[in-house]
Image 1 (cartoon, rainbow, N blue to C red):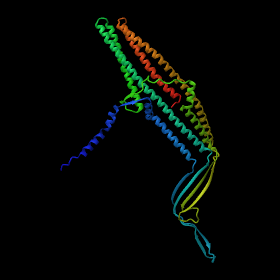
Image 2: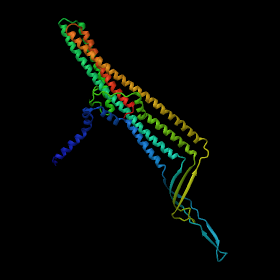
Image 3: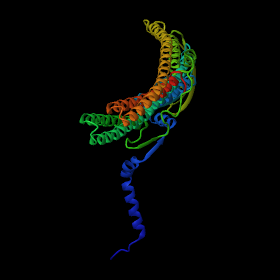
Image 4: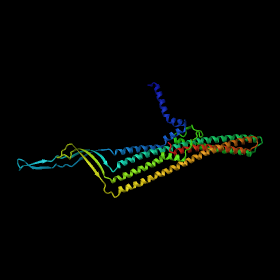
Length: 456
C-alpha cells in the first residue's frame, strides 16, 4: 500500500540537511566573514582567549580555596567511625559464692554474656586550643598566597595587553607599508610608460628604459615581501584573538590617528610603578608568605593542646558491667597535651631553612624594584627616541616630497635624467616607510610605557 506524502516529512528532511551542513557552514563560510576591530576590542579578545591568563585565574581560585581550607582548621573537626568484629567464642567468667542460708552450698553467678559479634559506632569532636601559632601563621600564609596569585593574574593580563597592542600596530604598520610600496610601484610604472614614450621619440636610450624596468621589478619584489609580512602579522593577530586566520580584519585605528599623551618624568613613572607594578607586589607577598612559613615551621617547638569529646554507641559497651549483648551509649571528654621533646633537629633545621628562604625572598623585593626601575627608564627612553624619530621622519618626508616633485618637473622639462626621478621616488618611498615605522614604534613604545608604569 502506498503511503501518503506529508509536508511535515519534507520539513523534517530539510531540517536534517541543514543540521548536517552546519559544520561546513561554520568552518568555511563563517570563516570568510569580516571582523571590525579597534584597539580596546583587540585587548579584550586577546585577554579572554589567552590560555596562560586562564591558568593564572585558576591558580587564583585555588589560592582562595586554600585560604578557606585554612579557616576550617580553626573549627571543630567532627569524625565518625564504625566497626564490626567477629571474635572467637569464649564463655564468660563465673563467680562461686556460698549460699547465705547454707554455707556448704555454693551458688555460681555468671559474669555477663558470651558475645561473638561486636558492633561499635563512635562520634568524636576535636577542637585545637593551642598549636604553637601554626594555624594562625598558616592562615596568614594562605592570605599572602591568595594576594600573590591575584597579582600574577594582573601581571599576565598586562603582558597580554602589551603584546596585543604591539601585534595590532604591527598589522597596521604592515598595511601602511604595503600602501606605500604600492604607491611606489604605481609611480614607477607610470614613469616607465613615460620613458618608453620618450624612447620611442628617440630622446632616451635603452639603458634608461632598462634602469626603470629594473626599479619596477625590484619594487614588485618588495611588494611581494611586504605582503608576506602583512600576512604574517595578520596570522599572529588572528592567533592571538583565537579566530580563524581566514577572517578578514577591519582595523578601526590608523597609525597616525592618535598621538600619545605627553610623557611624565622618570621619577614620577618610577614612583607610580613602585606603587602599582604587580611584579613588586608579587615579590612582597612572596616575602610575607615566606616569613609566615618560618613561624609555621617553628610551631612544632611549642606544646600542642586540644580538647576532644567522644560518644560511643557499642554492642557490647565495655563501660557497662557485666557485659551484655546489647547496644549501650557512653561519652568521654579529654584534654590532650603533647610536646616533642627531641626530634634530632628536624624542627630546628626546618625552621632555619625557612628563615633562609625568607631572607632570599626579602632580597627578591629589592631585586624586583631594581628591575622595575630599569624597565621604566628603558621604556621611557624608547618612547622618547620613537617620538624624536617621528619629528625627523616627517621632516625627511617633506623634503623627499619636494625633491620628487622637483625631479618630475625637471624631467618633464628635459633638465633632469630618468635616474634622478628614480632616485627621488626611492627616497620618497623610504621617507614614507620611515614615518610609518616611527609612528607604529611610538604607539608600541607608549603601550610598553603604560605597562612599565603599572597602569591597568
